[in-house]
Amino acid sequence: MSVRELDFLAALTEALSPSGYEEAAARVFREHLRPTADTLETSVLGSVHALLKGRQADGLSVLLAGHIDQVGFQVAYISEEGFLNLVPVGDIDPAVLPGKRLEVHTASGLLYGVIGRKPVHIYEYEEEAYPKTIPLHELFLDVGLDGDEARRRIAIGDPVVYGTRFTEFGDGLAYAQAFDDKVGAWLTARVLEEVKAAGGAAGDVWAVGTVQEEICYRGGQTSAYAIDPDLSITLEVGGTQDHPFADKKFGRDFKLGQGPIIARGPNVNPVLFDLLVAAAKKEDVPYQVAAMPFADGTDASVIQLIKGGKPTALVSVPLRYMHTPVEVIDLKDLDRTVQLLTRFILDLDPATDFTPTLANRKERS
Ligand SMILES: [Zn+2]
Image (cartoon, rainbow, N blue to C red):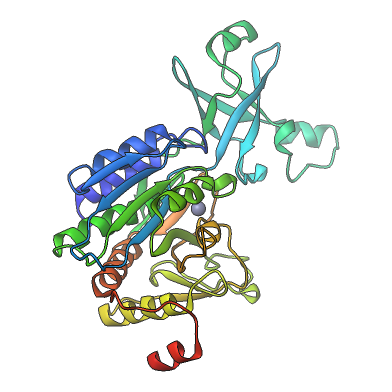
């Protein structure tokens, strides 16, 4: 991966973007794609649509969706003493919060705060049971200001994020906030660049950075409706079970560094699934398969249902510790996913019939 590509990934993860506040991440995404895209537009919800025009009138149009929003918080209440109460944006595990530093983004700039809790030795002194998890509404953010100053500088609704800096560590791994799903947005942009470098595709290719995915896939729904593609692939992160205490019996036995995870099940068109596997094999890219007997919590769940229905697929980069301040990926899984998707798009036959029929299955087996 080049320095430019790595810097783009780091900038995406560090750009503020809890659902509904994605403008900073959208700007990073848009500016990176400006030299590549034939057209760039931003929807009224805030999703960014980058188009690479196809060479042929009969080429199939492909929408690649990766969401640029992240989980986080909003300021809900400022106490007399200046402590903040937060409400979650998306699924937050309150167990990861005590002792953390968070960032409050206000109209007048960035403020740091820390999540405090009663010290351990006080619990011991008072012979009280030590609570394992404190619910979010009983936690508070200490921004080091008194009540008057806190209310002067902070507004109800201001966004709050973990603020973790992108860091490479271990053997080719990296941790950051919001690899879910800045990785997906990064992939859509990189595939657009690679397809263009290869001379373009038969059909239009859309790289779309969607908004508000963490609160029910709202940007993906409106963008797919507006673009109305022939097919769509959602690019995501997939939780692994390759760490201690993970239970593999529920499936999801994925590992970092073993290649992208291709989902299989009702949310995935079977012809599209087969073509993605064929592209992986052709490029000699390792891949993992997820059994997904439901519409998973991604943009693919709504894009599949646009208009009369769309052929959809879900390809995910393996990730540890989803929705925590330290999401972990293996960087080599990213380049492999770009390679797989680029091959799929370049090989896409305009005559492909995505209707699931026994004949379709038989021809390809
Ligand atoms: Zn996601």
